[in-house]
Length: 377
Image (cartoon, rainbow, N blue to C red; front, side, top):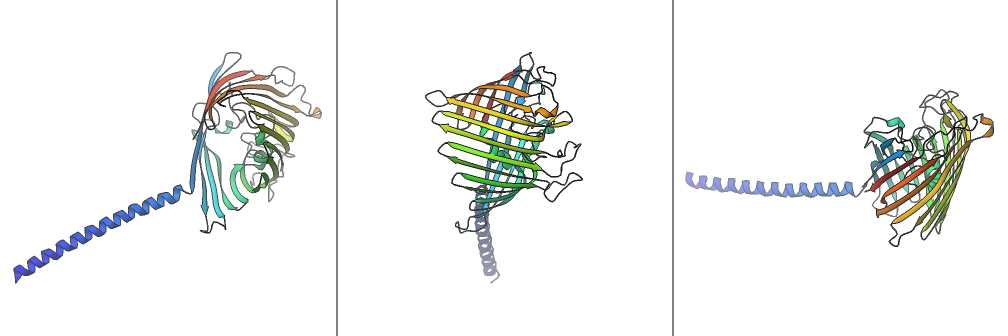
């Protein structure tokens, strides 16, 4: 009898062990499936991207430099709050980090957004954008550090050069334009509408950085319309909490900026132009001044495979006559040849023929020639 019970007990134990192993294997498979579903769920909502951009240039007096050209990596998030796609109500967001891939060279500046990286000298990684919000059909509401409607809708049509440019539209007036609200604006509330080529946006900043802080410390609006290769855009931004003698993280009293742009692309040709009217927006040393700026771009794809492109244009910014800045201005021509090897990735050679003047009429900057690469992924 004891032997029978022993045999029965061993059989039951073996059965229990086999059942436990089966359950464990099933749970493992389920965990793997759940992990896969979790990963799929995350990756279906997140879109990573990046752009490696480096340039090497030399100035006319012999200085040589290797410089960042606004490289960045980031992710965009979109998560539907309803299984019914017709509701189209989503949580959206994004994070973009700037990269200092090489030491910044102050003598030979080779970048598409002038002055944008000065605030991050020495940082290997720094925040360019960071925002969250909601979208519903054609509407988006976002808050955080993000591109302004002044730039997105009013000025980005002229932002076509691989290097140089962007000096006469008032976007990056101080560092990255975050304080004034015209560039990558800090602490921004933004509402945009986009449908059938029409885009409209309004924004306000809640920065609370000066004794004159308001409920909204700056406000702005922008609009653009595109049809059959032709596009126009306008942008406006006004500072409400400016101070007379601003610190580096404060805006100037009376800061106001307006920009209008237009572009046209047809077959192998592209052309764009912009005009900006800037009040107490540009800075020279510790002084701010009123100015008007014009930028122009002309590009032509000249190879049969549509990979080779030549472009030229100019930037011109001059203070208003009553600003007592003498002959001071910003004036340079740009020439560029590029080869596109993968979608928007390319190698290029560019030159800036600089004729900018100091207040006494002397040349202010050297001309620069450089080569660079832009690799998007």
